[in-house]
Length: 612
Image (tube, rainbow, N blue to C red; front, top):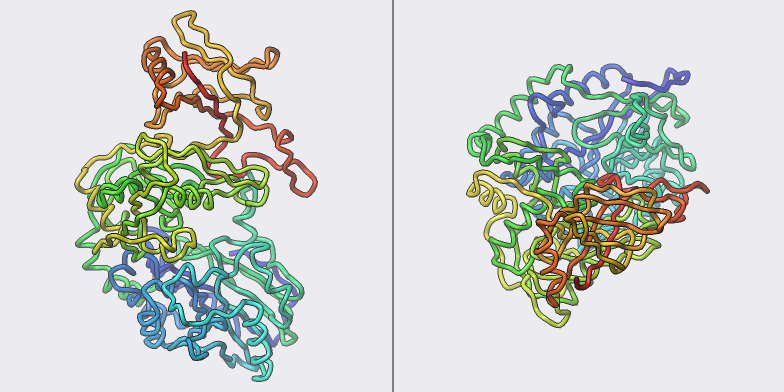
């Protein structure tokens, strides 16, 4: 437990927060909802005039949610007894009717100031805002939705989503009229400049909730280990505090009678905390049948399966390849695309046996697999639109998708997000040709580029089950990355010379101008079908201003054939340490330390070979 404390007035009120459970109960041997319940109870007992506040995103996504459509979370939330819960986008994963049923079955109010039906009324089962009397205090609560709410939920097209600022101003005015001493926005609180409501709307005393990060801990440098968080941020008089999602942390803000913050605690939920017996009983009741069916090994992997967020947004991943290959093969389509946001748990599995529950938790959304007819031009436009570029991307340059059946090069520098040199199968992509794309129904409904695609088939099963069935049938897998999305941070052009001495075939390129050094073991020769050969020696000669990439003589035949065939695109790719100053990106006047993307520790160059 950590605390930042000032002199506490006798008359105070404490907010304990939040939820953001993603439809999960957690594992028995880890921080989980039963231990969380104990931590909530302890904090409420510790403080006078304390209330528990939820933040939404509680009904989904998880394997339990797929089976029970969020119904399992209602008794668990009722057990926690929040005074209010904010409505967020994942609470609508199963549509408005199911969401309304869950809201109405809850023993506490759900609130959101932005969401209205087609006739201007609050979503059934919710309120736009509410007040709660706590001791001598009247606390007003409302919540807000994320800016892209309609594109990330199964929300009726004719229902309304007001702007964040407009809705917040209406909530503050109404709660002031109702005599609120303290006004709190409880729900999703994005990071940094993604959330400007505190600067635009006066009168909100606190914004509490999460978009996944824990303020004061997650934003520390990797080489700094410090469990003492910074006090909550104060923005134009509003306290802004995020404590992560699921079961890692709880926050507690204490305010005095004047509405001033006088105490802050961050409690880490650990396995040392005794689970709440009542919550354990709820978990067991809902999880029993599911454990029997899926809680055992379905397949074995020889390599780790990395489903961390940074990995799947930032680079091609082994799991991404497994999943998209299964999608494409199931649909008998030309290519498949999976959004990294649909890959959950943020963990690494294996090597070893993998339970069915793990796969369904990794792919927990109620998405069906659709096959859509799209033009080559649409594929180019869509995958280009998913690339993130420096300097505007705070996460660095990223491809932003996982794919199968397609290879392309991409780059994200100087504000330009580019995807080019596409191949479908082993043939150049034709912008005028029609291709069959296997993807999620969610992507067709949520993204403008694919909005007009003609759907020719839709699966009866959810994508998670389709992928699990494929893995169970395979039994044992050894997935690898095979150069589907080729990152290009610098293009050194065509090889200027070829050296055939010492039993090696050596390609000579101009030296990269943005490199401090190269990473020899990463250099490979690639065609549109994947890796042809791995380099045996790589040398960067700064004096001669050349880069030499050598391959063993046993690979000479394959390389010569690839280089001389007119229908084969032979290229050399390899990692290098980037020169921060050469790229010219700055952070507060200092050179930005590259690479920014957490999934990589080097940049990549490309050279072209055209004939031998």
